[in-house]
Length: 267
Ligand SMILES: NC(=O)c1ccc[n+]([C@@H]2O[C@H](COP(=O)([O-])OP(=O)(O)OC[C@H]3O[C@@H](n4cnc5c(N)ncnc54)[C@H](O)[C@@H]3O)[C@@H](O)[C@H]2O)c1
View 1 (cartoon, rainbow, N blue to C red):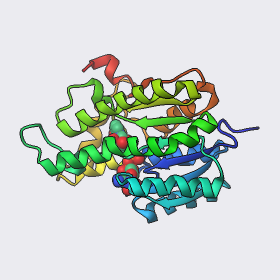
View 2: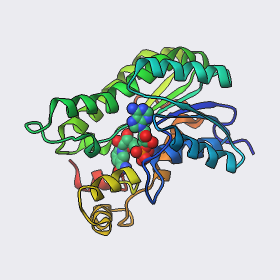
View 3: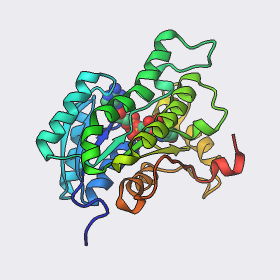
């Protein structure tokens, strides 16, 4: 049976993962796209982490390659697209997963440093714009798809100014790119993950000195569906749908993947 993205070429930017006990959103998405028939370019600034993802894909019989990439550098992103086209000949899917909050030194507006604000801008917003800019000519040729990983923080009174601001602007970027590229058949959507049990979310809080069990229990308790956080696979399945031809009439949406958190508690 043909996979849901059979024959397509995908780049997952941030397709490695923060070390930890569970699977990250980016790695799960790279693996799932490969399972469903895509050849996957795993781009990450930590090459060894991207290589681990590629090993997992090849271990399941899938096809993937790594490109060491700093998603905040235009030269590096240009090189990523060039190496993808040289390696696989086309590009159908761009998945922009890079992003972080606490680990970048984010804080409330009157406390955040200029350096931390700039880091948040570069990682949560500029990275997705750069990759979209350089991938767009190839995506226009293939009538391809972009998914930007934003956050449910967009719809909430999230206290940390960098993440709130940049992830909200990422939705604006999604709208802008969707409107400008619909005429070329390119679809651009965003996902708003809520509380996910991924290493990035848990380890950053454990690093602040909080016990892991307490961090997990507090996050689980906030989720209406099953009283448990989501996983990287929940984000990956939403991304698979949006990248697949099943979503061929969907562009410019920002899809919450949050276990009912927003509809139950609002902002
Ligand atoms: N886990 C959650 O609860 C949650 C909630 C909402 C949104 N998100 C979003 O999900 C995304 C991350 O999910 P994840 O679980 O895959 O995180 P992750 O930290 O496991 O993976 C992100 C990868 O990006 C890489 N990376 C970081 N900076 C980079 C750069 N400049 N260039 C290239 N690669 C870089 C890291 O090395 C890492 O391998 C982020 O955008 C985050 O904001 C997560």
